[in-house]
Each structure stands twice: as C-alpha cells, then as structure tokens.
Figure (cartoon, rainbow, N blue to C red):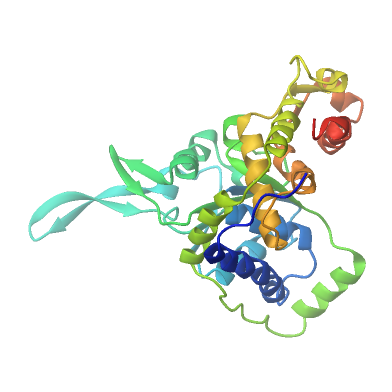
Length: 337
C-alpha cells in the first residue's frame, strides 16, 4: 500500500518543526530527567493530540518533576493540585465570593487552580468521587460551570493525573467514565541501575539546570490542527477500531480469552485515541503518513486503563499487559484485511 500524499508545503514546515522539536525537547528535559524516553514520548504524543494522561508509578520516580518540566518547555501555565480526602470541588474549579465594590455587594467568581494550561492532579485517587467528578466537565468541555455560569478554560488545556499503585488504603478508584477521558495510562517504572546512579549523582552535586522554553501555547494549538490533517489509510482506521472492539467480551468477534478474562472492554474513545496518537507519532518521526506500527506501539498506553479484568483472570495471574499482547497477536493476521 502506497503512503498517502504529504500535506501542503506550509504544513510540511510544521512537520519539520515537530520532528526537530522532538530532539530539542528531549535534550532540554535531559537536564533534569534521566532516561524515561518512552514515557516522555507518550506524554508528548498526548500533548500534541490534545489528550489527557493518567500517570501511574511508585513514589519518587520524578512524575511531578517531569510534568512541570514539560510545562516549562512549552511555556505553559502550570498548576499542581494535591488531591486529599477533604478536598472539595470548589477547591479545584473555583467559587463565588461576596465582594464589596464601592458600597455595592455582589457575587464574583474567583477561579480555582484548574484555570491553567497544564494541571497536575497529584494522587487523584485519594479524593472522593464528588471531587474527582469536578474535573470531568473541565476535561471534556474545557470549561467549568459555577452558579449556572460557564467559564472557559485557557487553551491549550491538559490534565495529567498521577496515582500511586502500591498504596490502596484510603483511596477511591477512578470510575470507568473518568478513566475513559484519559487518552493514555502512562506507566513509569524504576530506572536501570546506570540511570539511577546518574540521577543520584545529578541530584546530590549541585542545583539542577534551568529548563529553557522552546515553544508556546500557540505552537501547541497549531500542532493540534496539523495532527488532524495527517492522512491515514481507511484500513488502518478499521484496524484501530477492530483492536478496541476485540477487547469487549460477549461480542460476535471477541476472542475466547477475552470472554474468559475480561469483564469490560475498551469503548469508542479507544479507537479515536489510537488514530490520533498514531498520527502524532508519525509526525514526531518526520513522517506525513501513519503506519500500523504506530497504532500497535500505542495499544498499551491506550488500552491498559480501559480493560477491566474479572476475578478469574486475577486468580490465574493474568495481567492487562498480557491481554493486550494477546490481542495484538490475535489481530496480526487480519491487520490489513
């Protein structure tokens, strides 16, 4: 199959800017972040696609530092919200207060920390569902509603939420409806020994280097427009849809292991995010067309928080990662049919 035609000349310049920017971004982030290239790539893909990210990792793996550094690279307004059991929705979205202006009292809206370009929702699963739900409208509509009045959020707008996988006591698991709003579930694991040695060396021998901004919010919005213009073959779109649909149990074409191990599979957004993410990955590698490898590479971060295993799978030691691997293997033969 021949790749589709490239974008217009004006857009090709932006393609080159994204490709060159990837190298510059990685070089800038390497001043404070050691390793984690795959994690950085997934966060950049979500950023350029306009999606939100759920970041899962143990304490001390530089999740907060990484998000803050990316915000600095793109010169975006950054806000960190520490989610706790007593956090209220108004603590995130903002509230109305009574103000006295020239002898006249009236209610005025005071914006909360959600009014920024990049929000780090730290340990989002430590706050009750009512407060978690305060982010739903912001993530989906890029606005908040207070006293019946809608307030638009600044653009671009991203939510990057972290959760600790080892401390489950006193936590409130995110409902499926909110999990589905996140484009990726990015897993940060421990570094190899050499990288960990380098981290300890850097953090104990002086102040960290300053991050220099390379782009602006306007650049990010321009990237969003370009991503949607990247051509993709109809067969690849169908493959992304089939990959997401294959994870749903009790469906006509569901594999046997899906019916055996999965209680709930990926929805429509999975296919959308697979295609969008594949388009961004192609641009980051300097290509103006999508390949099947782009979709397959992003299957893990896209699907791992959208597949719910049943008790039988847990009893047999089956993991979501292994299920996604079997899905990719099962669909390999029908990828382009």
